[in-house]
Amino acid sequence: MASDSYKEHLLIVDDDAGTLEVLQRNLTDEGYRVFTASGVVEATQVLEATPIDLVITDLKMPKISGLDLVRHVRENFRNTEVMMITGYATIEGAVQAVKTGAEEYLSKPFTEAELFEAVERALEKLRTRRFGRVFVEGAPTSTHGLIGQSPVMQDVFEMITKAATTSATVLINGESGTGKELVARAIHYNSPRASAAFVPVNCGGIPEGLLESELFGHVKGSFTGASETRAGFFQTADGGTIFLDEISDTSLAMQTKLLRVLQNREVTMVGSSRSRRVDVRILAATNKDLTELVKKGAFREDLFFRLNVIYITIPPLRERGDDILMLTQAFTRKYAREYGKPVPRFSDEALLTLKNYDWPGNVRELENVIQRLVVMTDSDHIEVPDLPSLMRFSAMRGTGFDRSLASVETEYIRNVLAHVDGNKTRAAQILGIDRKTLREKLKDQGDE
Image 1 (spheres, rainbow, N blue to C red):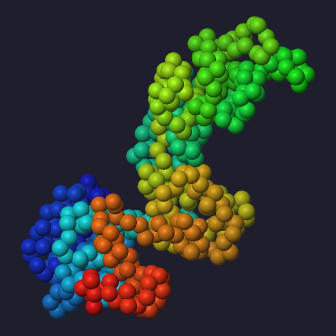
Image 2 (image 1 turned 90 degrees about the vertical axis):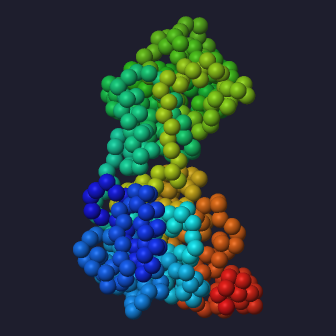
Image 3 (image 1 turned 180 degrees about the vertical axis):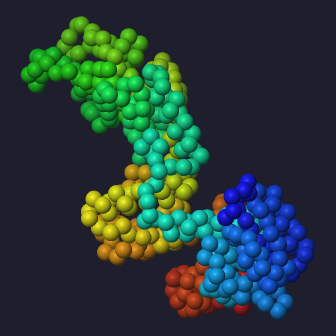
């Protein structure tokens, strides 16, 4: 794609001048640079002269059909995606278009929203395919040791840079597995305290009866089993940074003690009456909404205000777009090197499936999946069937929650038929219906 202010370059091919004008106007308004052609011959001339990301072609045109153009693009322009539109939609036509190489098939009349969604889906597949070609080459760049180029992660990087220059308390919020500790480490190791200790503490992983002793230390004989005086995490972090992960899991009593540390910068060991001053920067993290916990009386409001001097929200992986592909590349190279195996290549479909999956476990879940794939896959090429079963269902992602059940069903039937090369018996088996029911559905859709 050429370097300019447009998102991508599109070529619309249709023998109807009115359709060309409407599509060109709508897509230009969306930020695309749009070229037009009234036929296949003119379209091939544009393709030879200008880098095109997506060709949107009508199916039925005089002399040379849209299918011939699809075939020509597939054979000669591997960096170009193709989308078919038609006013004569049939299941057979959709199957033929997909088999020939069209990534999207849109029936007239369609709404602007349906057009924009189909265009974006096709371009997303193109971006994924381009990424797949350079997957094994080089390593993804990182910022503060974190991998990502999405706008939401750029905001996180900016906040890390600002937080690292101060000694203010930082509250980090994000779902489990998003990398809250990595952000905390980035703040510490880019701060003036970098040469001192970074001490992570999982507040939710320490029993309530032991947490005070672990944080503040204890003196010999202060409780059963205290055979010697031992410093706590705050003393260990003196001069450096302590990271209190899942601070929302602490009791109200412990929150009171933590508030005292934040206010006075002093800790009192269990069994001692004397406070000790500590020079510790406090970073805290939670996967819960502390403002809601404050309203419910489950978290002290004054402690929340003390912690919430600088607030950083880490986005869930599902909102990070192509960062998923970058992380996949990094984890694949990491575990291939660790296990002494060649770096496997992912098919375009497998990468797209990974990108479209919801990732409830976020980056931690992605890393676990990639590690398992590297270990368990014998081939040097990873396809969709190699992925966990839950992810395979995301390969045929919907286009939003504004579609009717009938339209979703129609699209799914078309995709299944395309997958089995139009074999209705096999399609009926996959759909879990008999051939008679399938014929009735095709008839309802005007395809039989």
